[in-house]
Length: 94
Image (cartoon, rainbow, N blue to C red):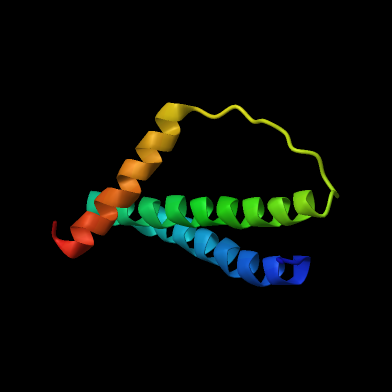
């Protein structure tokens, strides 16, 4: 079971990573740097969402919240997935 203190311990570093990456993006000079920084930001935000989902699932299992459907843009989901996979493929030179 995931509790709020564990969630806090995971979310705080992620917020720092996102903040530092956004600050670095302001000073980035090349398009390659900007792409890599954007990948860091998008991946960290995705991880934040996954942690939030874990916490929500924990609360749902305890009966503390009701499930809710959210709209999502499939194009954004696919684009983010492709960027993450492309970044991993570039690292592994695939």
